Amino acid sequence: MAGYPHGKGRIRSSAQLTSAAIIVTMRVVVIGSGIVGAGAAYQLSRRGAAVTVVDGGYQGDATQAGAGIVCPWVDHPEDDDWYRLTREGARRYPGLVEELGEDIGYAKVGALLVAEDPADLEPVRSLLRRRRPGAPEMGEITDVSTPLELFPPLSDTLSAILVPGAARVDGRAVRDALLRAAVSMGAGVRTGVATLTPDGRVLLRCPENGGRPGAQDLAPENAAVAGETPAVAVGGTAHPLTAQDRTGGQGASWRQAAPSAPGSRVSATATASPTVAPGTTASATVAPGTAAAAAGEAVLLDADAVIVAAGAWAGEVCRPLGVELPVFPRRGQILHATLEGVDTAWWPIILPRMGPYLLGFPESRVVIGATVEDVGFAPRVTMGGLDEVIRAGLRVAPGLFNATVTETRVGLRPVYAPGPALIGPLTGRVVVATGLSAYGLTAGPFTGQIAAALALGETPPIDITPYAPNTR
Ligand SMILES: Cc1cc2nc3c(=O)[nH]c(=O)nc-3n(C[C@H](O)[C@H](O)[C@H](O)COP(=O)(O)OP(=O)(O)OC[C@H]3O[C@@H](n4cnc5c(N)ncnc54)[C@H](O)[C@@H]3O)c2cc1C
Image (cartoon, rainbow, N blue to C red; front, side, top):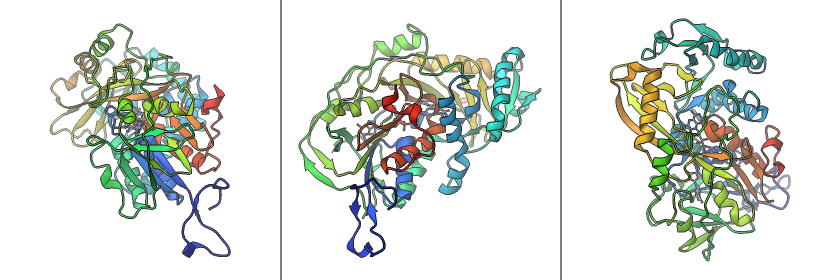
């Protein structure tokens, strides 16, 4: 198949050989089935690669917790690289929705940027004006004199401007739809902890218990996925990860996604009493699952290329290659509430400059989030975290006072300390794709597409130099 790296891949079968063409199937293992890994698996499968997705089902994966805001134009005013990635990710959503042909919770509901003082809206208004010619999909920015008509629980003291092109999406639904589509084209999805060997091969250790429920069910009966070879266990060692750059490249974005101040109630509470995944010996600052991966037997997955889409755990996964990737987890706690009998499906996203965002989904659901905490691998919902979200949420939308709390979620945003996302080849065989921080539901499927292109030796759809591991 055109574009595959020379010397890689496996000839499909003699029946498929013709004098005109030799069809070669590239075998690719994707580590991580979050939105990035699922996006990569989908794109690889569309191109005819033999794909195996492996996931350890770690508690706190970011995709299941993500709020679902797709509104890239208001953030990263000084960071064109971040902006380009998120803008391109957002731009591709309508096409993806059409391709997948199923409901992934995507809807262009618009976003209301709100502030107590109307003067505070001016910087973002001029940013949007500057960006609109290059991103007409954001729609025409308008002042909204009666925001309560669009989002009834809102405080009546807020000024607002509307970004009509903003959308919301259901991260879990996107991930699952991408995986289902990949499986329907032959991909296999396996539950287990993957470890790399120093030369970039993948060892898979299947846990007795654990893993995302149902993931095994996604493996098709006769999938042309990567084969496996018994191997001795080769383990990585657990290591402490610390938050290295607490700004995480957020810049002066409209949404001030800075972590809670060190020593704040949320951080202190979470650090004082770490919870670790069952079966691990990890502490709050150690990647869960690592110790378990080091024990027990593993099978070697044959692959021509490997994509590491392991989110906040990517640094740990890549360590056996001899590289130190400063990827760390940034915790987000988020709350789901319902307003019985109220149609919230088309409510706009509420984006204050400081504090929590709110967005509506079908079935009377409102999502309020999220904390921003650098507390290591501690995917726990805390009293302090919920307190922060509820108080701030009610300040912006006091009309939610009687809403029913239906669910709390927590996820670990993968942050690459030096700046924007981390996407690129690490070795001739291994590609890494992570670091999407608070923007992974926006840019995740597109990042997966880039990673797939790199694994297949194709030219990626945008210049990836700014995200390459070896450029910073
Ligand atoms: C509270 C919250 C709100 C958010 N809101 C938004 C939003 O509104 N808009 C937006 O664009 N983004 C948002 N995000 C960010 C977005 O959710 C993330 O950037 C994105 O989900 C990251 O996806 P990922 O695939 O890189 O990582 P993950 O979803 O974390 O997936 C990584 C996967 O790798 C697996 N894994 C790790 N190590 C191994 C291993 N060794 N072997 C096998 N499997 C392994 C894990 O089990 C996990 O499933 C939010 C995040 C949070 C936490």
